[in-house]
Length: 64
Image (tube, rainbow, N blue to C red; front, side):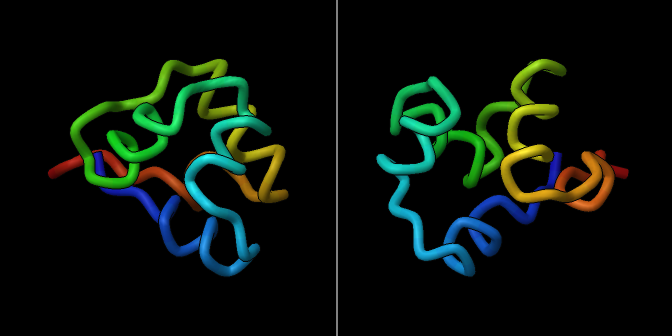
C-alpha cells in the first residue's frame, strides 16, 4: 500500500519516535508503515488520519 505518511510526518516536524508515541505504536511500526512493509489496521489508519486532519484516502492508496 502506498502512503504519504513520511511526507506528512516531515511537514509536521515529527520524528518517527514522536509520531509513534502519539499513535501508541513503536518507532519500528512507523518505519515499516513509511517504507510500505506494513499496512495499518483500520483503527491505526483512523488514528493517523485524525492526527493529521486528513481522510484515510488522502494518506493511504492501495497498490494497483
